[in-house]
Length: 184
Image (cartoon, rainbow, N blue to C red; front, side):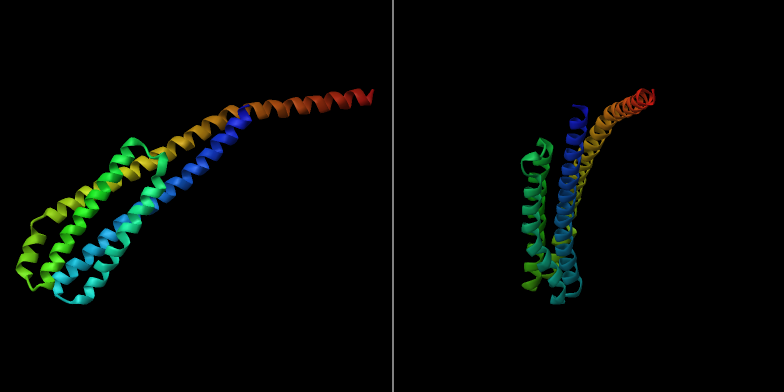
């Protein structure tokens, strides 16, 4: 029974490792999409060179698939807090892109001063800070889930190793006993 529990714990730990890696990768994808867009928007604001919009457009294309992958990775196994955080991350990402979109449109329409005022309002900075905090909390939750699975596997192994040692000792004693009987 203890051996089966250990095997089950190890299987669950491997699955948690897989899930944690997926969620962490997907969180990095969300962060990267927002950073790409923000980098492009800032470059365009500073230089008025449309080449900088490539990064902005790239981030814009990446965000929805990144959020979808994260939602899929969390699936039904998400804790209540992770579900709340996902909703917050999705909302904050939408708010950040709305802010970026507004300033890029202003620049496209020749409203440099308005776009600069929009960026300097700190609304985008605050949104980004809240987004980072939410992503960091989600990462901490995932790593904590992985730590728990690892600890459970270690406990299961600690229960089974003495049993295996005992069985090994019994086998040695049985062989020694058999050898003595044969030798008589």
